[in-house]
Length: 299
Image 1 (cartoon, rainbow, N blue to C red):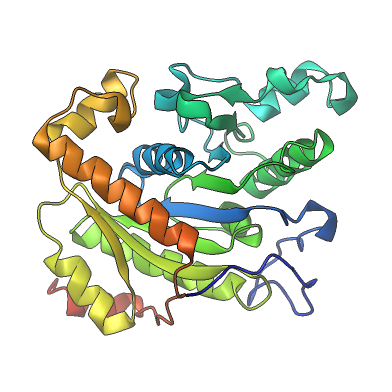
Image 2 (cartoon, helix red, strand yellow; image 1 turned 90 degrees about the vertical axis):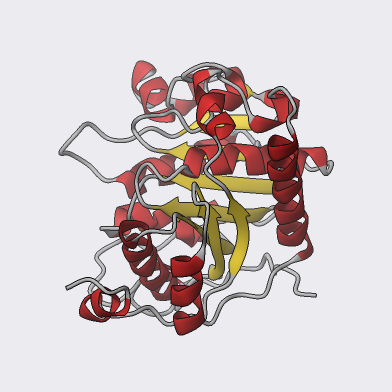
């Protein structure tokens, strides 16, 4: 059984080939919790997956903090039943004088005690998402909100196209990828695998595996996983109840029970237990863009 180490040596090499991103300040390392960063193609269900995984961890008796990393700031919507104000908005309201903030200004308790934070993002076309994540972690540190957390989940927007989007990986122990059984999802997953591999050269993060979501079958995901060395961690089908959960401002654990929904909840509990116990990192090798087109049969 693999356990996650919490000691983090300072980076000694450039942070990824060609990267201009600033190294992680060692004082901002999250040392007291297991940290997971959830990635995947935009609209694939990362927030739904993250929120229900947070609930599953909480039902295992763990203190959970979920951090939404998207200007849309709806990662924790089903947990809190509201669009919570973002850290950036709150900081701007006090002209970035953090000493004027109270914990309840930016941390909100969600279903079953899950603590929720929405980092937000810079104004469109300006700034960097990495700065926003750094400011959020810094604020949580200053208020000692990470001291008691057992689990921290970063829910990160879309595909990884720059170092800013990849910055939560500097804090994470495992990178998790949400993907559907289709080409676009798998193409995005391939890029995310490369991003996690780049960060793993200097940080503790390792690739945990793929969570198949919104898919009746997993044959294409499994083909790609077998070819690259990726592990499939869980499978959640394309159930209408899952889609309706966001419309009802509800996690799946609060929805009216059906046999199909109970199976999904059981799968979330199994996934949380396996992540808590410690999963072996995937020694996966991403494909080149042309290679993945050929592999999945697109001309």
